[in-house]
Length: 202
Ligand SMILES: [Cu+2]
Image 1 (cartoon, helix red, strand yellow):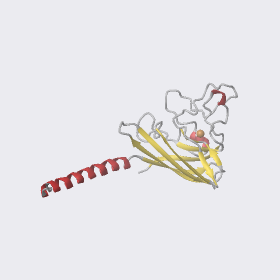
Image 2 (cartoon, protein in one colour):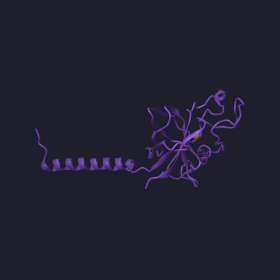
Image 3 (cartoon, rainbow, N blue to C red):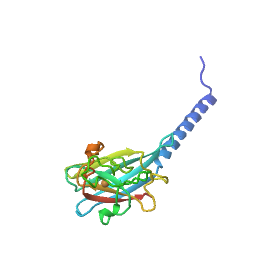
Image 4 (cartoon, helix red, strand yellow):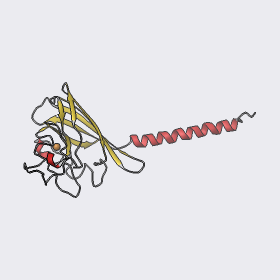
């Protein structure tokens, strides 16, 4: 039977400390990811308000993913479409323009202009800024989703291009209209209830 020498014991403690430090460094590297926020305000109804927090993290493979968390008050109960629109402007809400979609297709229109089926001029729900519905119960809305279609850091999918980006919350739910027969006007949520300019957190 052998008992560990004092030196071996010290080595072990040292190794434990190094491992713990490595863990803390890895964790804080993730925690130090870029953040952005948005103040949500009603387009016409001042009782609508809310906040959104966006956090970018990088996987071990270098894929950037952004988690979006949104909380609102004052919207009608039910589901409301939420998208990131292409311009960081909310006055009026139409100033946020179409859906954030810096890809090669150039069709940011949120829904079909015509009743023509199948519609031929839209990418919805496959714009880079197309998110998931916000669910409102008793006036309180919540939404949380993670996407690799956008970045907060610079690059082709960044939200912080020269004119920025904004959230739009719509009056109705996004039916996602991903079948050609569902591509019709209003399938992406219709009118605009609320807007929030996305700003990089310092
Ligand atoms: Cu929209």
